[in-house]
Image (cartoon, rainbow, N blue to C red):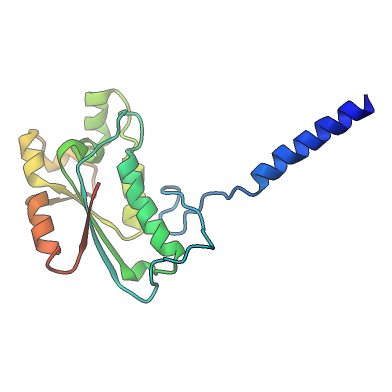
Length: 180
């Protein structure tokens, strides 16, 4: 029996040691969303002395209406990764223009509930992104094509003429355009 107990304890120690090296996700800028991990051996990292201008062209929603869109959460990851690397909030300029299939992610909770019978899980992420300095806009053309109005959106989202003109306006101003 003593041998069996020792073997069990040895296995438990190996199992525990394996997971003791796992890191917990960090949320340095966007609190509670976009969890990331430090990678000390990384040789390429964002430069904390640079200004970053990023335009996210978001047209993809979640696969399930009750889930946070991984693309919305990925904006939080992007911002958290820059913060982890030493880029201060005032050097990180992020605009997100939502259009196409992602329009549902910016609907007010009331409108979302009527359409999908669940609360909009993305609003909390968008609010956290805004608190971290991101500006969230929706394509006005996508709104009209879906017979939606500004009143159908969560309260602090802004409306752009179009996603297309956001890209053509901000790319020449030096914004890096990322398609989500």
